[in-house]
Length: 75
View 1 (tube, rainbow, N blue to C red):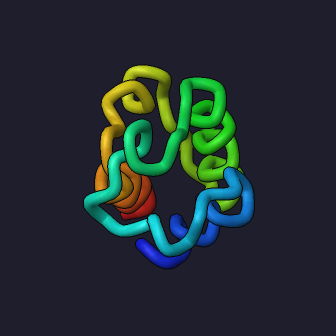
View 2: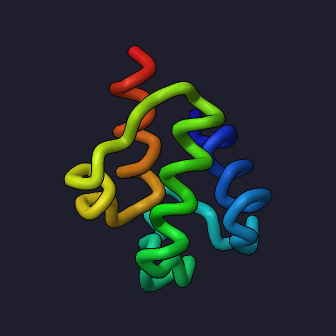
């Protein structure tokens, strides 16, 4: 799941692939602002056929948080 989410971050949000590690912080390390976070949520919803609620989106701090949310919805 991590590699698939990394691909979304790299291809859709244009994040440097060398920076995408599970512990990377979305805002501080990857420079994902609130607009990019919404775009990321839309891309993830499309790619994985899940729904990420706004309340969940604001709680995502690290790449691992994103992996955990998407994984739990796919289970």
